[in-house]
Each structure stands twice: as C-alpha cells, then as structure tokens.
Amino acid sequence: MFKVGISGDLLNSNNQPCFGKAPLELFKKRDDIEISWMDKDISEINPEMSSKFDAILLNLPKATAYSVSEDNCKLKIISRFGVGYDSVDIKAMKRKNIVVTNTPNAVRRPVAVAALTMIFASASKLLKKNNLVRLGQWNERTNFMGMGISGKTLGVIGAGSIGTETIKLSKPFFKNILVYDPLLSEQQINQKGAVKSELLELAVKSDFVLILCDLNDSTCGMIDLEFFNKMKKSAYIFNLSRGPVINEPDLEYALENEKISGAGLDVTTVEPLSTDSKLLKHENVIITPHALCWTDECFHDIATEAINSILNFIDKKTILNQVNKWKSKLLRNELIVK
Image (cartoon, rainbow, N blue to C red; front, side):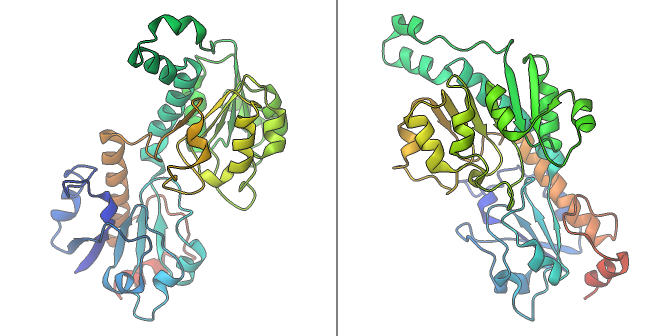
C-alpha cells in the first residue's frame, strides 16, 4: 500500500478540503493508495511522518533535513502546492533521493491576474474610495484621483512562467513593459513583448514595479533603499513572489518618507504578519495573506496537478514538474519498490 499524507492546512474550518473533493477522487479510485490528513497546526514535517508516508502533499509546513534525518525514512516524493519551494530543503531531499515537485502550470494565470488586481486597485485608489462611501465622505471623491495607466511603464522583476503570463496580460494596458531578469537574454525578453532592463534602470523608469522572481541568495533583500531612492515618488511597488526579496525596514522607510506612492504585498518577510507591523499603518499599502490568487479554480487545478505528480511517480511515468532531477530513471523505479 502506497501511503500519502496530506497537509492539514489544506482543510478549511469545516474540515473539508479547500480545493474541493473532486481532485481526491484521483486517489480514492485506486486500491493501492491510502490517504491520511496530517495535523493542521504542524509547521515542519517530522521524522515520524517521513517514516509513515511514501508521499506527502505539502502546503505550508517546511520539509527540512531534520524531517528526513532518521534511517527509517520511507518518504519518496514531496508534491508541493504552488510554484515556490523555498520551504523545502532541496539538497537534503536530493541526498535522500526524495523527489520534489511543484505546480507551476496551475498558478501561472491566477497569480498573473492577482498581480494586475493589485495594480488596478492601487492605481484607482479603490480601497480609499470604498472607505469614503462607508464613512459618509462621498463628496470628498475629487480629492482622491487615481492614476491612469495607459501611458505608463510597468517594470517586471522576474520573467519566468508567471512573469511571462503577466507580461502577456499587461500588454493592452501599459505603454511600455521593462523586465529585469539576468537569466534571460535581450532577445528572449523581446520575444515576450518587453524590453530588457538593469535593476536600477527599471526602478528609475517604472511607474509600477512588480516583483515575481524566485527567492534565492541573489534576490534576498535585493529591493532595498537604493532601489526605492531611484523610484519615482509617484510610483508603486508590488510583491507577489516571496517577502524577503524586499528589505522591509527599507520599504517602511520609503513609505514613511514618501519616497514612493504606495505598495501592494501578498507576501511578507514573516508570515503571518504581526498586527502591530508598521506596514499596516499606511493607507496606501494593500496587504493580503499570501492568498490573493486563491480561488476555487486555482486550488482545484493545483491539487489536480500535485496529485498527478504523485500518481505518475507511482506508475513510473514521467514525473510532472520535478524540481530536483535523478541521474537515472532506474533510481526512481527502485525507490517505488522499497
């Protein structure tokens, strides 16, 4: 029997799968698979879980070297919800020959739509105008003009699958789209319909800056006070990648000293964000709980993609979206029959 543990934080308050019941039928129709829900409140996979399950469908808990440290570890595959996998110690999993997958196809369009949602909400001062009505200040609307975007420049940091989708959706709205992505050539970026830019050049020229890059050693803290000082005072910055890409104290300073017009954050350095965070005192900052792209469609597709990765592993088919690679196909097949 192939045992699959499912991250407990994927249950809603009614203890029902937040991605709906349909994707789980892919497991339930098989008589060689047994599924179990893990506790909701765990923050890290422990060795006991790794000794119990052959596969883990993982959302927020971390998978670390400690998670797979015991000799009786039987874990063979971690199928991660979403595109980011910085919560998984890839090197530790590789040492243990544990496959790690993600779900980039399912989140590509939803995150791109979420990014544009933040831009449009900020540019139009949506939240402020909503509050005017609720506070009985209807006639003050002339004091809160939004910013038109048709003649403006969008700067995109990171043009992977999500960045590319965002560029595609953004073309009808912006006059220019700049991209900072050191992994792509000028020709590759031009083919996406954008113009290659250096990081600080993008800061200077953009009216809206959108962060969609991976979190790694080179991007951690990359958006700092030097970057904010280069931005237009009328510009906005948005982060839908990972919180630590932005130096948050520098962002707080930039907002406090009106270096920029505002920000939109679906991610923060520490999550959940503390209710006494200085970021929350700024009315020109939109903050969402790392969930802006979460919709019924999005989570259904994420779950389906993640589950299919596990099924393909069991059936010795091509593994979808594997982020760590095997040296040989034989090694993967040997893992299944342990």
